[in-house]
Amino acid sequence: MQTDKIGQMPFKDEEEKFSRDPRRLAKHTFNTFDFYTDSTDEPSDRLKAVAVTLRDDGYHIEDEPCVIIEEELSEYNVDDYRFDIWQTVNSYKSFKHSDREYTVMTDSEADKAWDEALDSYIDECLDIPENVRHYFDEEKWKDDARIDGRGHSLNHYDGGEEEANINDVDYYIYRRN
Image (tube, rainbow, N blue to C red; front, side, top):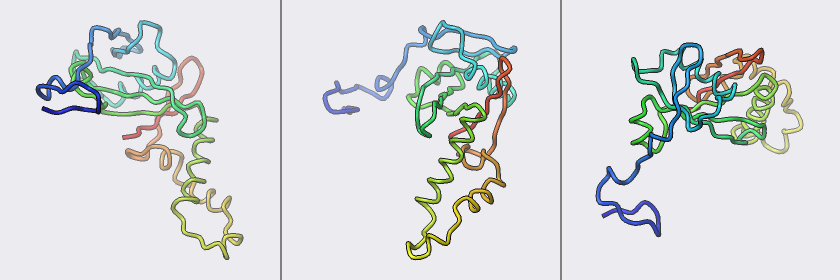
């Protein structure tokens, strides 16, 4: 028998190891795209932006809505939101980790996260000796790095940036995995 963590009861087989109750999901429709969430409340505008992106990507199985779960995070020290996506209710029920993960930001939030991502790259990836560091122009380097666009730094999947306008607010969507 296996246990997941210390103090948990052992599971008889893999099927018992992880399971969610899909009866708690609520079905929503936005711009002809059906999806489930874990709340009966009106989906947030950020969640709707993800739904539009998924619809435009063709991410669904015919007549079977996906599941979108919103999780608030602060990875970039901004009020950033992560959305975990499962392609079907059955995958949501059966798999602990989602099929896809997205981050949704406003323009100013994305700019701030982008600047912080570039600073992090300089600090963690560029090996600049201390005796020449004062010759290195960080702002010039970041200007050059910005040529590739925000998606290059914020979208860890394919470097793209999706955009959706919901209630006259532009949201920028970045796939994380």
